Amino acid sequence: MFISPLADVDIPDVPLTDYVLARADELGDKPALVDGASGRTLTYAGLASAVRSLAGGLIAQGFQKGDVLALMSPNVPEFAIVFHGVAAAGGVITTINPTYTAPEIHKQLVDSGATLMVTVGPLLPLASAAAEGTSVREIYVLGEAEGATPVTALFGAPLAAHVPVKAGDLVVLPYSSGTTGVNKGVLLTHRNLIANVAQVLSAANVREDEIFIAVLPFFHIYGMQVLMNTGLRAGTTIITMPRFDLVEFLRLHQEYGVTRSFVAPPIVVALAKHPIVDDYDLSKLEQVFSGAAPLSAELSLEAGARLGCEIVQGFGMTELSPVSHLTPPGMFKPGSCGVTAPNTQSRIVDPETGADLGVDQSGELLVRGPQVMDGYLNNPEATASTIDADGWLRTGDIGYIDSDGHLFIVDRLKELIKYNGFQVPPAELEALLLTHPAVADAAVVGRPDESAGEIPVAYVVLREEGMASAQEIQDYVAGQVAHYKQIREVVFIDAIPKSASGKILRRLLRDA
Image (cartoon, rainbow, N blue to C red):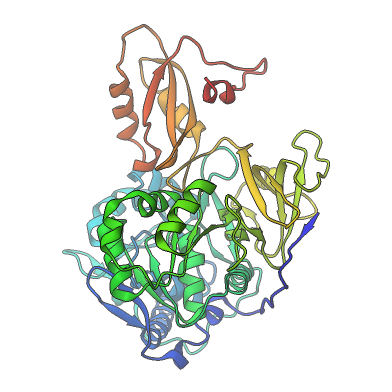
């Protein structure tokens, strides 16, 4: 067992919003969140006031402790108002990827039991279509949209004190594919999120005078926790971007003097290689923190040399709230995911026998700590296969820990594909491919890609030769899934390699 080399941190037994916005009134007129596109600013005092008003209004309109509100929005300052307004009211937030199709959104709304939904005007038609036949009784929009009810209609008398909650009460319900299979609701409690914010704040040495840029989506656990909640707890100013655009990203760094960028590997590629980077002043940048997918040692060194700062990475999962390993300032090692977070233990075990392995020996990474989820919603079997009786969570990733305590991820046991930091479950795409009338059998694997991390590649057996083209199959899938799940390449094959038990031998396809 590997113990964190970092000192334990205090994890207070308070509601999430009390913890995250503890200094909001003190910070007062300091900008908390700034909309990068327009410059619209939400101060700490304004954020706290709006959170209290939304919480009070929700309760006045019958929203009860444990009720679920679905939030589907790109990064805007008001995201934090809705998120913490619901949390302060004792509710649960399920965040939805805005690039999902209506059937994907519908499935999450049904599974989560959401009764209210908040989105933005351009997404209202999609939200309305997805909400049909669910428990959602009303949809509100951030800002204004024709024929829509603004979220401000929910505001009421400010809540004097947050609804009493216990540390183990559910507060966020993001969805993750876990190690295999389809999306599942991840049960994250007030204690889970508070613990991980405290762990990241301490290990990453986040300061109040910092400027963050939030291009990673708040609906994803990485952006939600490492950026939004950690930044607000520290008292930083967070510049929001609704989507990634390199020129705008660089302009905002220069204009606001961004000190720390939290990104995914494709953005590091751009920072290392795109000539336009040289046209902008990034001198205030102290660190680029990459997560959500592996970053090569070579790329981190190349980007770091160009920018004159450390390009570090961490390791995490939605099921870990999300961080279990990260690189503190001054502890950079090329290719490393950093060291085990405070209050956290790691094990490297033989995937076949479960026996513990030692320093520099590769095996499956297991993690135990206060950030480990409570389990999967309505799925005890998946929970039991992921967390053992002693609280160890199986990550499904193969790695080793060196003599300095640094984690290196070298392979993946789990079958998930990581495209631009998003999880792509092969089983979901395979099931969809098999509904095409020309497809007799199919398998989907991830192929390494310098820009995206991995791309989904489909190996397809046709019922008859020439019944469908590769483009026809790609278009068929593209019309039914979110952009990041789309098949990037189709390879026709005579037969899908399988084991005697019928399991697809994906490694044979990946190595072909």
